[in-house]
Length: 394
Ligand code: NIG
Ligand code: FE
Image 1 (cartoon, rainbow, N blue to C red):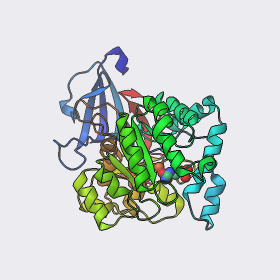
Image 2 (tube, rainbow, N blue to C red):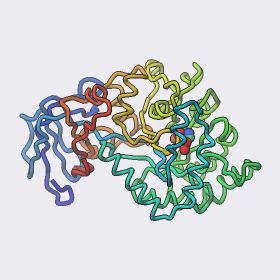
Image 3 (cartoon, helix red, strand yellow):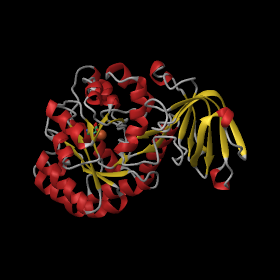
Image 4 (tube, rainbow, N blue to C red):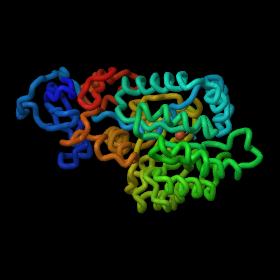
């Protein structure tokens, strides 16, 4: 069962295998009474169990469903402290605003590297236990050269999908001079962070950064070899989504308040719209219209946005359930968006599916079908998570 030993592994007893393999039937490429072979950490074969080839070892999952591991393409896990009191106040009427980010900035700056690393490891482990096998991690709660760079250096130890989000908000010490902060982000901060980051992100929203600032930051990141992604149209309508599409970004995230022109731009650009329904749940806001985007032919991803402010859940199964219950998506569309959609939002073709050659990253559900992810909200359905063919926490 250990990929590093070179032994091939047969997973048997899979009542329902979601492959997301386009060469198979339906959106999810489901195979019933299935088996899956892992060799060297990748999927070597899938199909009906009765046709399975011989392997060195076998592991029976006991008549359960198997889905690709979730690809959580949007998470803010580099922080210290929490904002439970802010959440409680919100539930009794105080609206969410971007300014709350500064509370976490103060706590993060005061934390040691060891504390930040421990909190990150705790959250990644929490995600694994809920079936997430790929996670993107953003900086954005340091907002100094030193604190952004150390956030990304620590994150890099746990994931290759690291994102420089120095442009989260303007920090309090430069509140009177946002231009100087943009100069810092596009200059010394980018210089210090680029070695540890794959992506550059901007919060393009009233109260954070405007379109001109966002464009300047994304272009500076691109010149340093970072690919672009953006937070946009979360708290109200704005220019972010169309800017993201015009710049050809891989993904634009939130997409809660969209005009028809925004939807058209998404459909024609190929930029993935990442929807983050845990935010709307936790801020008691209107949900993004997943149905409208899918009907327009937009590529949709679901992600957690796990962060201590707008959404402190790490649960992709919760996001799937909310997308189905509140956003007009079918269970199959939601599971696809949480796996293949997330992979597309990260420009990855090796994860989010279980076709031959893919990473053997998967979740065994304590359920006979992926449908139960939406049908049984709040239930810990992930029995076991496999990462590169090896059982992890579960
Ligand atoms: O994605 N929108 C910006 N950033 C986070 C919220 C961060 C916070 O409130 O601490 C988000 O929702
Ligand atoms: Fe976010």
